[in-house]
Figure: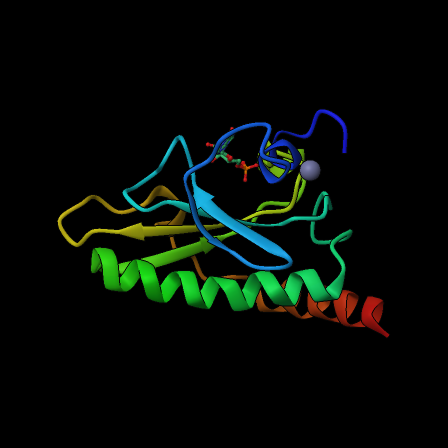
Length: 139
Ligand code: 5GP
Ligand code: ZN
């Protein structure tokens, strides 16, 4: 895919700090890390988001996230690892090549902003209606 920065990383035209690679995926360090060990896992074949990525690549990414997550735990002993994946400009996806963020947090570091939203009780009737709408769309 022309002008895709992550495709250029896959092609070796832009360097990266690689941590893992297999036939389908590449995992590398984010150059603007939210925390030490912030790692991205992406398919080698371009797909923009969850709606486009083929099942085999999606599976490979999630299997790789377990391997890389184990390695992050062994190497950095974090308090926990947040996993995040953005789809669309409306939720601030910046690089339009599917990628999963693995964000470890050290126990003596502040909370990650992505993991500390305020819990407010929902409107059960509205939740039920939304669930029905989504379930219907799955039929
Ligand atoms: P998004 O908001 O699309 O989920 O996040 C894109 C991520 O890619 C950001 O965290 C950003 O720091 C990272 N990123 C952008 N350009 C590069 C790059 O050239 N190399 C690496 N390693 N990470 C990048
Ligand atoms: Zn791409």
